[in-house]
Image 1 (cartoon, one colour):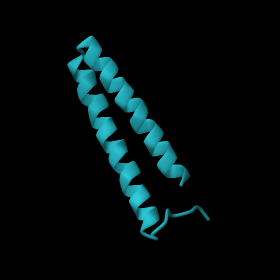
Image 2 (cartoon, rainbow, N blue to C red; image 1 turned 90 degrees about the horizontal axis):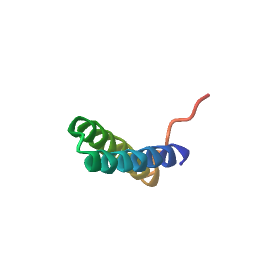
Image 3 (spheres, rainbow, N blue to C red; image 1 turned 135 degrees about the vertical axis):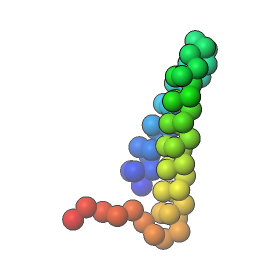
Length: 61
């Protein structure tokens, strides 16, 4: 569950960076921050679905 929280926090920070870049009209920064938001948001959602589906997250030995 900690992995989902970390991915979600990173996605939220990337979203804030996207909006900040839009305000400054830095299009390259908007692209990279937006792409990071999508990737980390996707990881968070799919990890959460995997945990709820009973697959769990692999643990270190």
